[in-house]
Image (cartoon, rainbow, N blue to C red; front, side):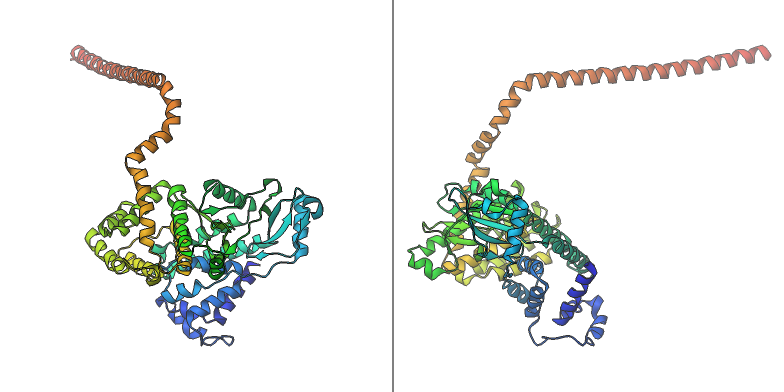
Length: 504
C-alpha cells in the first residue's frame, strides 16, 4: 500500500513539474537532465507556486492540510509559494450518508431513530477528517453531529510516514533544512492530525475553550453533549450564525464591523496570553457571528498551547515591538535560546529595526504580515535563529487573524488595539499585581505545606545529623583501619630487626 502511495506521489510530482523545484539544489542538479525526458509532464506553463498548489490538491486532503500549515512557514518558503499555498481550501466531497448512518449504528449499537428524534442524512459541512449532520435529541435539543470519515486513519498514517521521509531527505540535501527542523514540523503536524482522529479529544478541546470563555461577551463556544460522544462521533450544541466572511450581510444585521475586528484581536490575545490555549484553525469557514455580535467558533480539532515560559517571552517580544525597543527584542531571542548565545546584540537589533520600523503608524490595509514575517525570517537565517516548532500553530493563527482583520476593517490599527491588552497582562505577570496574583495561586499549596514545615524541618535536620554521625563513624573506622595497618607494619619491621640480630 505504502509503495503504491509513494509511486502516486512521485507521478503527480513529475506531472506538475515539481522536480524542477527540487532539482535546483546543487546536490541533485545532475538528475534534472533525466527528468526532462519523462513523457507525462504537463502544465509546466503555469507558475511553479501554482503547480505546487495543484499537486497538493491532487494528492488529497492530508496534503492540502499540510500545505495550509506550510503556508505559514515564511521562513521555509519563497514568497510566491507561501502566498499560493495560503489559497488552499479544504473542500472535500462528503462521504455517502449511508456510511454515516452505519457508523452511528455501530457506535451506539442501535438504530439511528432510537438515538435521535430526528437525523438529517444530508451533511451540512464536509472536511478532510469528518463531516457534520444536523439532528434533534429526544428532549428537543437541536444538535450538530460530527462523524469521522471511514478508513481515514490508515491513509493519514501512510501519508505522514511519507512526509517524514521527505523531511529527512530535505534536511539531508538542503543547507537550511536542519536549522528549520523540518522533521519536527512534520511531527508537530502529525501530532495534531492524530488529535483530530479522536473526536473525544476534540470534544474535550471544545469543552475547555467553552469553560475559558463561559459568559464571555466576546466568544461563544458550543456545549458538548457528552452522553452522545464517542471516538468516532461528537455531538454538540447547534449554533446559528453568519459566516464572518459575509461582511455585507453582517452590516445589514447592524453589526459594528470595526468593533468586530477589534474583538477578534482581543480574543486572540486572550487565548494566547491569559489561557495559553488557543483555537489554531481560525479560518473563515470555522468562524461565525451570532445575532448578538459575538464570535462563534466551531471545529476544535487543532488547538495550540503555550508554556508559561513561551507566553512570557512572546509577550516581551510583542511589547518590545510595540514600543519599538528592538534591542529588547534581540535580547529576548538570545535569552530564550532562540538565537545563539554569541549573537551580537547590536547587529541583530539593527536587522530587526530595518524590518519593523517601516510598518509602524500604518493601518492594517497597508501592512502585509506575510512579507514582514518573510523579512524577519530572512534576518533570522542570517543570525542562525532556530525555528521553534511549538510556535508554528501560533504563527498560523496570527496570519489567520490578520486575514480576518483585513477583511473586516482594513483601517484597524493592530498596534493600538493589542498594546493595552499586553501591557495589562504583563503588569499582572511581573508587576505588583503579578506578585499578589502568584501569591494567591500558591496560597492553597502553602496551606498544606506550612503545617508540615516544623516536622519536615525536624526530619531533615535529624537526617542530616544521622548522616553526619554515619560519616563520622565511617571516618573513625577508616582511621582505625589505617592505624591497624601501620601498627602491623611496625610489628613486621621490629620482627625483622630482631631476627637480623639473632642470626647476625
